[in-house]
Amino acid sequence: MDLQARRQLFQVHLTAHFPKVYNYVLRLVRRPATAEDLTQDAFLKAWQAFDQYDAQKPFQPWIFQIARRTALDYFRKHREFANPDVLAEQSTKTPSPEQNALNQEKTQRLESALQQLPEAQRTAVFLYYVEHLDMSELAQVMKSTKSGVISLLHRARQRMKKNLETN
Image 1 (cartoon, rainbow, N blue to C red):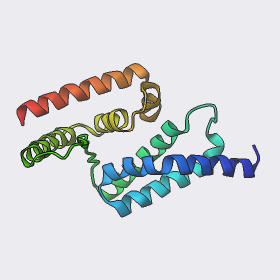
Image 2 (cartoon, helix red, strand yellow):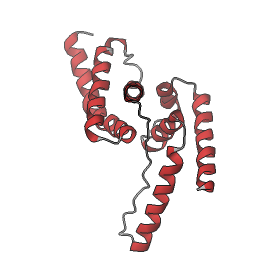
Image 3 (cartoon, helix red, strand yellow):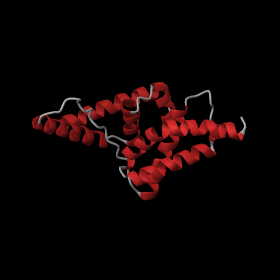
Image 4 (cartoon, rainbow, N blue to C red):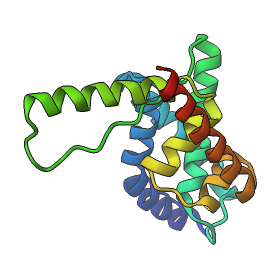
């Protein structure tokens, strides 16, 4: 593939995946400016390695893997820890004040339980339940096997259940 075709293909992927990758990184770092910088770094790394990308495979798991490593490098460098949250789905109806309070409490409990998970489990939960990656794509991002990520998600659910019961 010539350089112009590579640029066009990469631009298509950039346009399609930048918002998802940004949201993923934002959930990890919780700072919009840092998330934007890290997302741009991830796409720059992807461009630099684009000749190694297998166009027969989905782009999304590949870029999420790069974004995950970029965020982990940031955390190591800045001595911070990944802390993604999972937001409760919002109802289309306007909830009552009581329902708002209950939803907020549930969300806080869920976030607390999620924050207690190891980084790999938090990432797997986020990518599977929020970004809706399938097991094969998740395995690629996590550099694991399909059965490995199934087991990882099972352990994450078990640990979250335990965390929710104790909180």
